[in-house]
Structures are given as structure tokens and as C-alpha cells.
Length: 151
Image 1 (tube, one colour):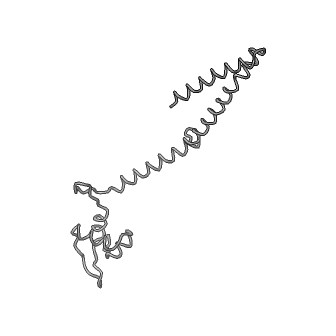
Image 2: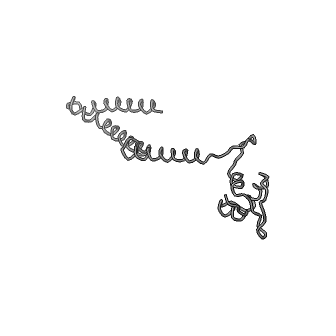
Image 3: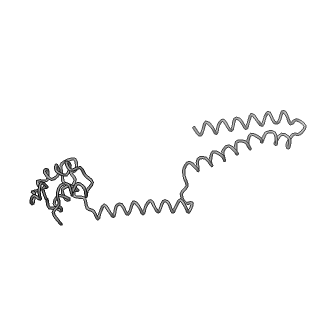
């Protein structure tokens, strides 16, 4: 790799000059030469020092570009697979499911609440009002029980 100054390395990596200088100093990298006022370093050594990381116990962790690239590509593939599954309707948004389920439960409740009147007229037309009242009591008890069980 070609020799680079601290300013060139900072520009290429997008890091602050002071951060680059500190990392060079911490890594003990020797200056190759001076070009005017600029200190020139072996770019391979500096880039290795910049992209080498340490973990909590001070152990050096070398970042493997191939492994990181493979991990990134797998994440992209997983994301694309989920998007395809969603488009094929194998996956649906949880909010959509909750809304639809809420609508279904509401419709079911309305139909159940209409049953006493319809049953009373069909079964006992001569005493429809009393039959409806009795059926309402049973329907409300059942709905209250279902509500308690769902909590």
C-alpha cells in the first residue's frame, strides 16, 4: 500500500485527524518520513490499527471484512425473505390482524345480542316479551363469562 499522511488517512476514513493520530501513537506505528510538514505512514499499518478493535478485557479483536460482509449479506437475504413472505401473504402485520380480529369479535357480539329477540319470536310468539327477557339474561351471562375468561 502507498504511504499516506495523517490528513489523507483522516479524509479517506472519515475520522478526525486527532483520532487518527492517537490511534497511530497507541499502536506504536513509526513514521516513514516527512513530506514538508506532513508525517507519512505506511497506510496498511495505519488502517489495520484504525480498524482493529479491543473487547472489554483488552484482547485485540481483528475485524474480518469477509466475515462482516457475509454477515451483512445474510441479514439482507433474511430481510428480503421476510418481504417476499409478506407479499405472498405468508406473513401479515400484527396490527392488521388485531384490527380484523376486533371487527370479527364486534360483529359476533352484535349477532349474539340480537339472538334473544329473534329466538323469542320464533319459539314463543305468544309470550315473546318474557321469552326475550329470559334469553337476554342468559346471553349477557355468557358474554360476561367470556369477557372474564379472556382477562
